[in-house]
Image (cartoon, helix red, strand yellow):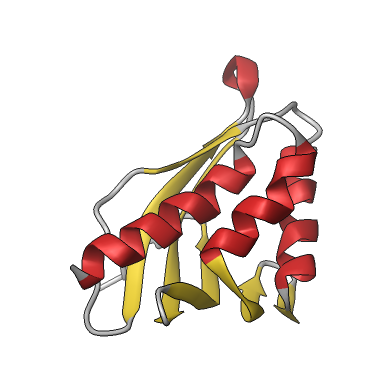
Length: 125
C-alpha cells in the first residue's frame, strides 16, 4: 500500500514535466509535493513548490524542444524513502538524459527530492 502511494505521488510529479500546458504544472506539483518541499537539483538546494516549478518549466523549455519525462523503473521504497529511475528525451533524436531520483514522503506527499542526473560509471577496480 505504501509503495502504491509513493508511486502515485512520483507519477504525478513526473506528469508535471509532460503537462499539455505550462498552466497545469503548479496544480500537478501541488498534488504531489508538500508546500515546504526541499529540492536538491543540479543547481543546488531550493525549497517550496515555486522553486520546483521553476525547475520543471526550465526543463519544459529545453532548447532542443519540449521533451518527455518518463519513469523507467519500478519504485523501490524502503520505509518512507523511495527511489526510481527516469529518462528525459527531447524530440527528433535530440539530447537524452537519464537519472535516478530519491524522494522522501510525508503524509502521502513528497517532501524531499534528490535528483541524480546521468549514469554512474563503474568503479575502476
